[in-house]
Length: 125
Length: 125
DNA sequence: AACATACTACGAAAAATTTCGTAATCCAAA
DNA sequence: TTTGGATTACGAAATTTTTCGTAGTATGTT
Image 1 (cartoon, rainbow over the protein chains, first blue to last red):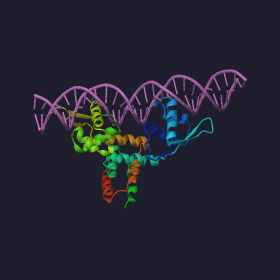
Image 2 (cartoon, protein in one colour):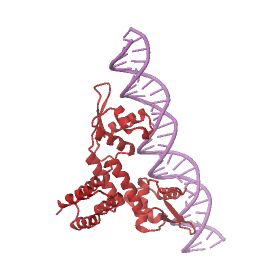
Image 3 (tube, rainbow over the protein chains, first blue to last red):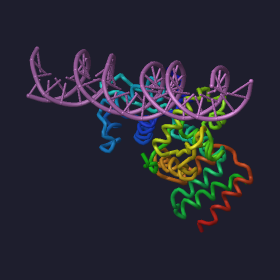
Image 4 (cartoon, rainbow over the protein chains, first blue to last red):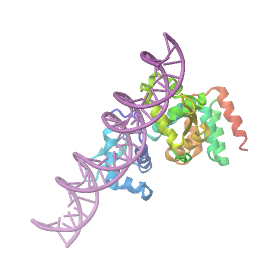
């Protein structure tokens, strides 16, 4: 089942992708440990989800050794865009600027962050 | 069950909220029609979900007449913030500016939109 | 070689969400 | 007042996601 592109990761899948993006290729054990205590679920749960993700094409894995190494097959950027797009359409009536302004309200920004955004906006002129 | 505050609307629930925010108080029929053909699900499905949402406190309703009138009990803004916050944490490592820049990439903005954002940013100085 | 340990495989239960069929009820029109 | 159409109520099936128990298998240690 290799048709990852348009597939929307579930909540749990997103958490795992998160960890893999940070760690790079990793074992189930490593991912499970990163998810940590607050997760509260068992090791085999993490394993199972990662196996399912592999079937879906979200992950791939190297099974040549005892400990399988899992790799994310979707990039953080790609996934961000996917989720963002859906959100803009679903919650912000398709308006990116509304979403951006909503995000700016969401959490106070440091001066650095504001500057960063301003600089970024320059390219749209 | 009146404890709406922290509850995360599901996918379907979000679509219904969307319609109610646009229409204001409305009947199931009206909401269902707005959801429209592309939805492809039956009337009773919409009804059921709206009933469940009422139990959860996401909606309230006026049952004094034959056609019940449903009202959203959560604001668009509140929900946007809720989902945004979760997304920033889950996908953008807690960084609002990253999310904003990601959103800007997501879809080309019109000059008006860019100006709007710039104006908005001024208040952070 | 035998054993303890760590890992994967697998199936199924549990939970959450979505969907719909059917029945009961109300309302309006004939 | 009776009938037809629309609406709500209800329960359950279907689907999707999450969770885990158990069994099997490989690995390294003694």
